[in-house]
Length: 135
Image 1 (cartoon, rainbow, N blue to C red):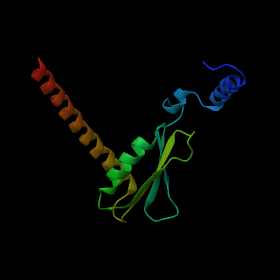
Image 2: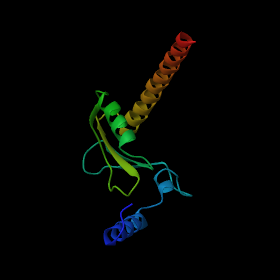
Image 3: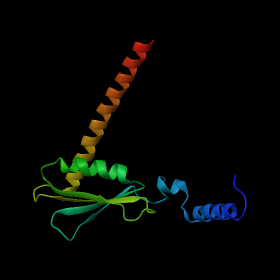
């Protein structure tokens, strides 16, 4: 471990940088009364909504966006993280006139659950096959 003036500065820097960081649990635990998902109408464009997902990040935002874009009735789907220290994502969805953004979002989530369940099942089968081959 280095000693001297530089070492003291490094320890002080590490201490101060940790002071401003929010506690880790704030990135995944909902506070009392806080909702997991919120929805608001996007007034800038027709037939569009903003979905706000609390305590989520790019992982979920990107997979939902990609699933929404597979739907031919979805005209636009995008997401953003408003600020790196805010643990939420905002997903904007615009659909055709005869299809609601809420319906598109619900269908995308349902399809993702089905796809991930199938992936989990195939993964478990592959592990079982591998273990039986080793034994």
